[in-house]
Length: 446
Image (cartoon, rainbow, N blue to C red; front, side, top):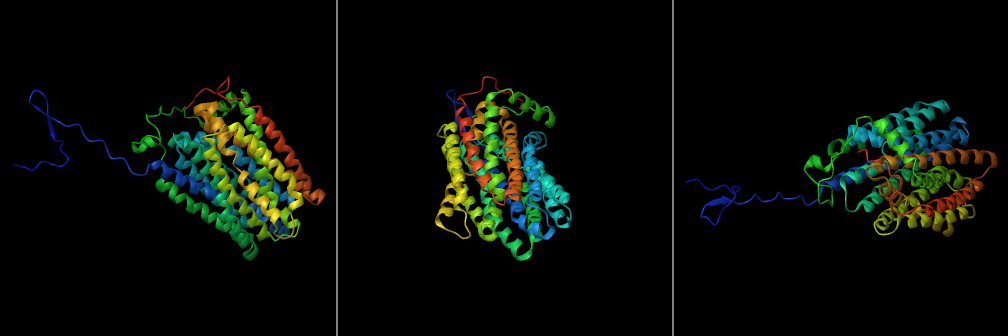
């Protein structure tokens, strides 16, 4: 007589005296949901992407000294970078639906690696625009906010606001690593050493994406984290470009889209476009060493991490319109005060600005993503991609104008005051948003 296998269910007698097998035991769930692994890989990607984008601000004085290019000329490459970073995002979201997150992100990282590496060979301004403006802009744009929105939308039902905040904060955390290291490399070994590090780092980040990234929970037989039922299967028509443009067309017919796009354009103008690009040269104008200014910008990133994660937590609990109104109002006040705070050395007022402004830097992202989901449903990743495009266009315009203003006026004071005024406009746009879904919601296309 053979021994019963441990996997064979024990017969259960029925009322009629016969034996029937017991129902199979449910499969044991893993202790850590794979959504957290995917979120960790996304966090690494966004950390690197943020560091790659921050490098041009470190090279402005070095390129000016070596090639004699004006700050306005150098800023034009940053403007192209920021514009493409934004315009690529909605198409990247549709491409991720069509070809998969892993393929799109790996191609984007390799594009950054090539663009950064070729910068070492440049001799003319147009080459800077091509390498750092076009190639790095396209690559980093493919891993912009639409990427984080896609990951959280596919893998999470619970904790969406918190995870969005953490992934958004990765941008600030990337600056923590790259800004001080990059400033030291530029000062000690020249700007070419910094672009080599960026090129190698972008290639290295592609490895965990290839090994660990998965497309959807269903691929592993899982539900999204916090879900109680299987989500509807994705429906795509195979034409990423057409879908992106169709979603834009439908979203542009709604009032909330223009309010969100307008306020987020001001967000980009007053962060990446102005402070992210020109804070270091502006501080250097007041006699502050580049390494010290870069460390302050990185310190802004420290508090940005805290502020954005906390904003994600608040977004799960507080009206997103209220949060955005408070964030833009406080940001405007801090920028109006900045011209009086810059000096040749560290002192308590500038440190207070760093803390205050850092907490507010990209805290706007989690509530903006939530409002996109509320008004546009399943198309939220693509709609947010277009809203992010407006963010980057605002950043690009101000990055270029601030450089021209510095060349013409000899200082950045006017740009700081103008940015404070823009924040007041953003407050008005946020107050004009209504609760609930828009009256003409975008049809769900996938």
